[in-house]
Image (tube, rainbow, N blue to C red; front, side, top):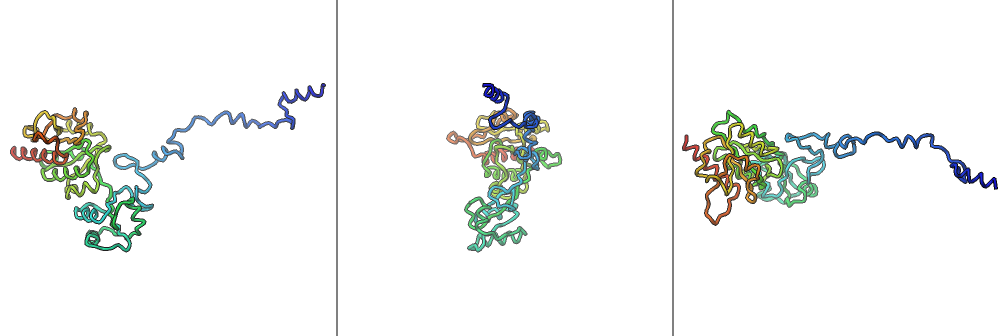
Length: 324
């Protein structure tokens, strides 16, 4: 029938049984045109890369967090270390570790350690805050604080170039740490450097020990006198020292010479110490002018890094004294 044929034709041309479709006015066509190239991640406000680009940086160029440090409450200390526990706090104060605040739990059961901590910070003018135990738990990240916690500010690292000073008295003597991760070793090395006339320590920025409260305590005050510098790349820092006239010697069991035969001891010197397990890394070893070993009894495989450094620094100081 002609009528049915016309209806089927109308459907084929876009009409429906409910009536003709309404056009979009060109909106669909414009929607298919796109919005141009996708912006870079750092240009998108809601992307974490944008926040990273806008964040302020520290002296070492790392992004500085704008939020509370781990374990700190909002509005509390940031980018600092918390020493928790009565014995630890008292030992830190006895070692003259720089501190900014002593936190004391409300209604604390006082003993000799608490009284000594409170007396010490009062004499030094360090602020003391009475803190609810719940807040103290959050501040110390759940550590056993016994009602006492001490806030230690971030350590201000020197630049490796700061240790190359022609005005420094004596023959320059620097220690570089390659892969050392125990802060007690760093503290012991600082103490040995102070005892034997050293001028500073260099540590890498990554995968290395840092100046923590434990390092401060082990140094027995030497950390206040001997600077610690951070290097973005230890190998490049050692190469820069060589260009500045230093000799670089590495401590290792398989040395070219034994320590008593170190003729370079009287020259400007960088002594590089590796980790007990891995020793010196390949690139650092290749940068050294000489590899030096410490003679030991056959049954002893290796020395603690802090002890080995102390032995080497003593020998360097002895040979320099002999040469007057």
